[in-house]
Length: 285
Image (cartoon, rainbow, N blue to C red; front, side):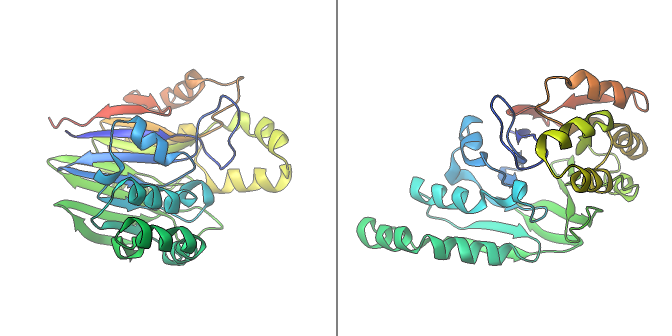
């Protein structure tokens, strides 16, 4: 089965009543189960998608903002307590190993007592961390993986990811400002999962969140307006554009129709405004 789940589709780390959860996705191709980013809620969302935690083969972290890595450790630990006995590969930028080292240290009591009392394999021996930068990454079960450094200031190590196998190409933009080079990276993708921001909603969002001036500067410098996302999709000739990491995702004044309206000013291809639990079939042509 080849498919893609958007597990969490909200841009930013805040969690609000009735709103969506921060960023995480799950990709199943070539008999591999791959998690991309681990925002809060990823563990439950994987299970809700009908996937067993022990079936996860690899996890990719696009960058170290909390809404992309906060639940990496808890996901691995929960897979372990669920019965994991084989290695999970974790790929991330510089700093990912530091995060995991400190997480494992914080769980020393629980880890040690479960090894002694329940006979479990030590968790640290089941986690294989690979630090990556731009370029080709090691294949995952026959899946070709490539990374492209994108523009997400002040973070410098933030990477779009491209997965190719079984005549399927799926690209994740990660968090980025409008980055024209991404169009070539995503050329002819079956699905481009790209973050999207409504410019007209930014003032209301920052007023609600606080630190309005600084936060607004960050959003405008570091994220992509929906119309510019459409330019990437058009220039890349993608088959299906899926909007993710939505800004805003929990403002009742705005709906998926507002995102689509911005996309359609530039591009008339197939577009899905992501929502938590959204599934996209990846059957090859």
